[in-house]
Length: 274
Ligand SMILES: Nc1ncnc2c1ncn2[C@@H]1O[C@H](COP(=O)(O)OP(=O)(O)OP(=O)(O)O)[C@@H](O)[C@H]1O
Ligand SMILES: [Mg+2]
Image (tube, rainbow, N blue to C red):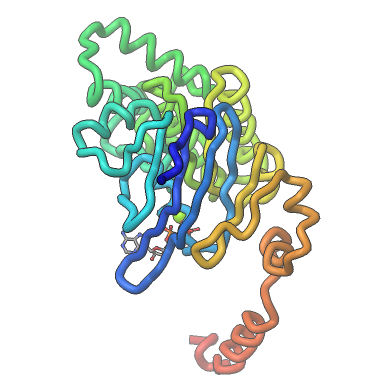
């Protein structure tokens, strides 16, 4: 008999999840239980399936096999209409921020609210936007267009939009990529603040190990479609696996360097001078 998943198992449960695109097996039978109120960080090399994995959590992608549960309810097989209600309970900070450039900061934040609720009261909307922007330190920027904002400010506005509907879970896809260390740390502090003050469950995909160590209750590393490691910061730092150590310390393999030497030897001076 199939094991009944219990609510105590976690706010989000992935069970025997597999996903392929054609012959490309990206997720290979992964099971994962995400604890409520905790910050789970997902690391792993580019293209290993981090974004694909978290897109399954809000069912932007559907698995080839396996199941996704949110609060003990199976969601991977729900029709789009029913998923909309579930998605209001999860915020998603997309890789790259993805604000609407033609809309002001105010309109960007109001966008998901208008999609899911029929709040007509202008004062209520103004208050909501103000509160969300204040949480990320961006109150006062309501009338600005994204083009006028720095990378860090855009990420903060995108975060304000992700929390517009007061979600229980936030999925962050590389929230600090492209930011300098100080601005990255502002985002780290925001993730911690949302967890502490609002009890939000966070799942954060990152390449930024300083950020991972700072915010994570738990770190998972994906490799070849599987979870290679699963532990706290200390366990990851001290992990004996060479693949893990090379990844967290940013060391290329000898074979990578050999390929690099080979390709630079092929470049002729004439090519550089052109
Ligand atoms: N919609 C899609 N159709 C076909 N292949 C896809 C699709 N989405 C992702 N893939 C493939 O799945 C694999 C994993 O992609 P994914 O975007 O999850 O990587 P990632 O770990 O997030 O990488 P990065 O760190 O560069 O963001 C890649 O080989 C990618 O080409
Ligand atoms: Mg990605």
